[in-house]
Length: 209
Image (cartoon, rainbow, N blue to C red; front, top):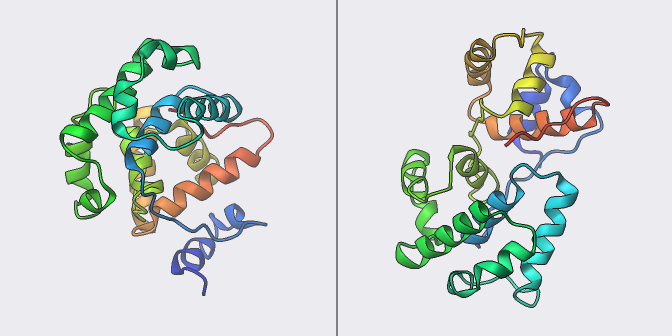
Protein backbone atom coordinates (compact mmCIF):
# COMPACT_ATOMS: atom_id res chain seq x y z
CA UNK A 1 0.00 0.00 0.00
CA UNK A 2 1.34 3.41 -1.02
CA UNK A 3 1.81 5.88 1.82
CA UNK A 4 -0.89 8.60 1.86
CA UNK A 5 1.79 11.30 1.57
CA UNK A 6 2.63 10.19 -1.96
CA UNK A 7 -0.77 10.81 -3.48
CA UNK A 8 -1.18 13.98 -1.40
CA UNK A 9 2.06 15.59 -2.59
CA UNK A 10 2.30 14.15 -6.09
CA UNK A 11 -1.26 15.27 -6.74
CA UNK A 12 -0.29 18.92 -6.35
CA UNK A 13 0.17 20.44 -9.83
CA UNK A 14 3.37 22.29 -8.91
CA UNK A 15 4.93 19.40 -7.01
CA UNK A 16 4.12 16.78 -9.65
CA UNK A 17 7.52 17.21 -11.30
CA UNK A 18 9.21 16.05 -8.09
CA UNK A 19 7.69 12.61 -8.54
CA UNK A 20 8.60 11.84 -12.14
CA UNK A 21 10.45 8.49 -12.15
CA UNK A 22 10.55 8.57 -8.34
CA UNK A 23 9.39 5.91 -5.91
CA UNK A 24 7.69 6.62 -2.56
CA UNK A 25 10.16 7.22 0.26
CA UNK A 26 10.01 5.08 3.38
CA UNK A 27 11.05 6.78 6.63
CA UNK A 28 12.63 4.46 9.16
CA UNK A 29 13.89 4.72 12.71
CA UNK A 30 17.57 4.21 13.42
CA UNK A 31 18.49 2.48 16.65
CA UNK A 32 21.96 3.97 17.16
CA UNK A 33 21.17 7.62 17.85
CA UNK A 34 24.72 8.64 18.92
CA UNK A 35 26.11 7.23 15.65
CA UNK A 36 23.51 9.17 13.67
CA UNK A 37 24.60 12.36 15.40
CA UNK A 38 28.31 11.64 14.89
CA UNK A 39 27.60 11.06 11.21
CA UNK A 40 25.73 14.35 10.81
CA UNK A 41 28.58 16.24 12.45
CA UNK A 42 31.26 14.49 10.39
CA UNK A 43 29.35 15.06 7.13
CA UNK A 44 28.93 18.81 7.52
CA UNK A 45 30.49 20.87 4.72
CA UNK A 46 31.61 17.72 2.88
CA UNK A 47 30.57 16.21 -0.43
CA UNK A 48 28.75 12.90 -0.25
CA UNK A 49 31.80 11.10 -1.64
CA UNK A 50 34.21 12.53 0.92
CA UNK A 51 31.69 12.03 3.75
CA UNK A 52 31.40 8.35 2.86
CA UNK A 53 35.19 7.97 3.03
CA UNK A 54 35.35 9.67 6.44
CA UNK A 55 32.53 7.49 7.77
CA UNK A 56 34.27 4.28 6.66
CA UNK A 57 37.51 5.47 8.24
CA UNK A 58 35.62 6.18 11.45
CA UNK A 59 34.14 2.69 11.62
CA UNK A 60 37.52 1.17 10.79
CA UNK A 61 38.87 2.69 13.99
CA UNK A 62 36.53 0.25 15.74
CA UNK A 63 37.21 -2.77 13.50
CA UNK A 64 34.26 -1.93 11.28
CA UNK A 65 31.67 -2.11 14.07
CA UNK A 66 29.40 0.63 15.37
CA UNK A 67 31.21 2.00 18.45
CA UNK A 68 29.67 2.40 21.86
CA UNK A 69 29.68 5.89 23.36
CA UNK A 70 32.34 4.76 25.83
CA UNK A 71 34.61 3.69 22.98
CA UNK A 72 34.22 7.11 21.34
CA UNK A 73 34.98 8.89 24.60
CA UNK A 74 38.05 6.73 25.15
CA UNK A 75 39.60 6.88 21.69
CA UNK A 76 42.45 9.42 21.47
CA UNK A 77 41.50 12.64 19.69
CA UNK A 78 44.59 12.27 17.52
CA UNK A 79 43.10 9.15 15.94
CA UNK A 80 39.91 10.99 15.06
CA UNK A 81 41.88 13.87 13.57
CA UNK A 82 43.90 11.37 11.54
CA UNK A 83 40.79 10.23 9.62
CA UNK A 84 40.15 13.79 8.46
CA UNK A 85 38.10 15.42 11.21
CA UNK A 86 38.80 18.98 12.29
CA UNK A 87 39.53 19.79 15.92
CA UNK A 88 36.02 21.18 16.27
CA UNK A 89 34.37 18.07 14.83
CA UNK A 90 36.46 15.82 17.09
CA UNK A 91 35.28 17.84 20.07
CA UNK A 92 31.64 17.71 18.98
CA UNK A 93 31.71 13.94 18.36
CA UNK A 94 33.17 13.36 21.81
CA UNK A 95 30.58 15.74 23.33
CA UNK A 96 27.81 13.59 21.85
CA UNK A 97 29.35 10.40 23.21
CA UNK A 98 29.77 11.88 26.68
CA UNK A 99 26.20 13.18 26.66
CA UNK A 100 24.96 9.71 25.73
CA UNK A 101 26.81 8.26 28.72
CA UNK A 102 25.69 10.95 31.15
CA UNK A 103 22.10 11.52 30.06
CA UNK A 104 21.09 8.86 27.57
CA UNK A 105 20.36 8.96 23.83
CA UNK A 106 18.42 5.73 23.50
CA UNK A 107 15.88 5.48 20.71
CA UNK A 108 13.05 4.65 23.13
CA UNK A 109 13.83 7.70 25.22
CA UNK A 110 13.78 10.09 22.29
CA UNK A 111 10.76 8.44 20.69
CA UNK A 112 8.75 9.33 23.78
CA UNK A 113 9.62 13.02 23.39
CA UNK A 114 7.90 15.64 21.26
CA UNK A 115 9.88 17.44 18.56
CA UNK A 116 10.21 20.51 20.78
CA UNK A 117 11.46 18.41 23.68
CA UNK A 118 14.07 16.83 21.43
CA UNK A 119 15.25 20.22 20.19
CA UNK A 120 15.77 21.29 23.79
CA UNK A 121 17.28 18.00 25.00
CA UNK A 122 19.65 17.18 22.15
CA UNK A 123 20.33 20.87 21.50
CA UNK A 124 22.06 21.03 24.89
CA UNK A 125 24.99 19.14 23.36
CA UNK A 126 27.69 21.61 22.34
CA UNK A 127 28.17 21.40 18.58
CA UNK A 128 24.74 19.99 17.80
CA UNK A 129 22.67 22.64 16.04
CA UNK A 130 19.17 22.82 14.65
CA UNK A 131 20.10 21.39 11.25
CA UNK A 132 21.57 18.28 12.86
CA UNK A 133 18.48 17.86 15.01
CA UNK A 134 16.24 18.29 11.97
CA UNK A 135 18.10 15.44 10.28
CA UNK A 136 17.89 13.34 13.44
CA UNK A 137 14.13 13.81 13.61
CA UNK A 138 13.71 12.92 9.96
CA UNK A 139 16.06 10.04 9.35
CA UNK A 140 16.62 8.49 12.77
CA UNK A 141 13.30 9.05 14.50
CA UNK A 142 11.09 8.88 11.40
CA UNK A 143 9.15 12.07 12.15
CA UNK A 144 6.96 12.86 9.15
CA UNK A 145 6.34 16.60 9.52
CA UNK A 146 9.78 18.22 9.80
CA UNK A 147 10.62 21.19 7.58
CA UNK A 148 14.05 22.82 7.23
CA UNK A 149 13.56 26.39 6.02
CA UNK A 150 17.22 27.34 6.55
CA UNK A 151 18.58 24.61 4.27
CA UNK A 152 19.89 26.23 1.09
CA UNK A 153 18.86 23.24 -1.00
CA UNK A 154 15.28 23.42 0.23
CA UNK A 155 15.20 27.16 -0.40
CA UNK A 156 16.57 26.81 -3.94
CA UNK A 157 14.28 23.91 -4.83
CA UNK A 158 11.15 25.64 -3.57
CA UNK A 159 12.15 28.86 -5.32
CA UNK A 160 12.38 26.92 -8.60
CA UNK A 161 9.19 24.95 -8.05
CA UNK A 162 7.06 27.86 -6.91
CA UNK A 163 8.72 30.65 -8.93
CA UNK A 164 9.96 32.60 -5.89
CA UNK A 165 12.48 35.44 -5.86
CA UNK A 166 15.72 34.42 -4.13
CA UNK A 167 17.13 37.94 -3.88
CA UNK A 168 15.91 38.48 -0.32
CA UNK A 169 16.75 35.26 1.54
CA UNK A 170 14.90 36.38 4.68
CA UNK A 171 11.69 36.89 2.72
CA UNK A 172 12.25 33.65 0.81
CA UNK A 173 12.58 31.77 4.09
CA UNK A 174 9.31 33.25 5.34
CA UNK A 175 7.56 32.48 2.06
CA UNK A 176 8.57 28.82 1.95
CA UNK A 177 7.48 28.29 5.55
CA UNK A 178 4.02 29.54 4.65
CA UNK A 179 3.94 27.42 1.49
CA UNK A 180 5.10 24.32 3.36
CA UNK A 181 2.22 24.49 5.83
CA UNK A 182 -0.25 23.32 3.20
CA UNK A 183 1.69 20.05 2.97
CA UNK A 184 1.60 19.29 6.69
CA UNK A 185 1.72 16.63 8.15
CA UNK A 186 4.02 15.32 5.41
CA UNK A 187 6.72 17.98 5.22
CA UNK A 188 9.60 15.56 5.84
CA UNK A 189 8.65 13.77 2.63
CA UNK A 190 8.40 17.13 0.90
CA UNK A 191 11.99 17.90 1.91
CA UNK A 192 13.22 14.48 0.81
CA UNK A 193 11.68 14.79 -2.64
CA UNK A 194 12.86 18.39 -3.02
CA UNK A 195 16.43 17.28 -2.30
CA UNK A 196 16.15 14.33 -4.67
CA UNK A 197 14.74 16.49 -7.43
CA UNK A 198 17.31 19.25 -6.98
CA UNK A 199 20.15 16.75 -7.09
CA UNK A 200 18.93 15.66 -10.52
CA UNK A 201 19.19 19.20 -11.89
CA UNK A 202 22.33 19.75 -13.98
CA UNK A 203 23.60 22.92 -12.31
CA UNK A 204 22.39 22.71 -8.72
CA UNK A 205 23.19 20.80 -5.55
CA UNK A 206 20.81 20.26 -2.68
CA UNK A 207 23.19 19.95 0.26
CA UNK A 208 23.80 22.98 2.43
CA UNK A 209 24.66 22.42 6.07
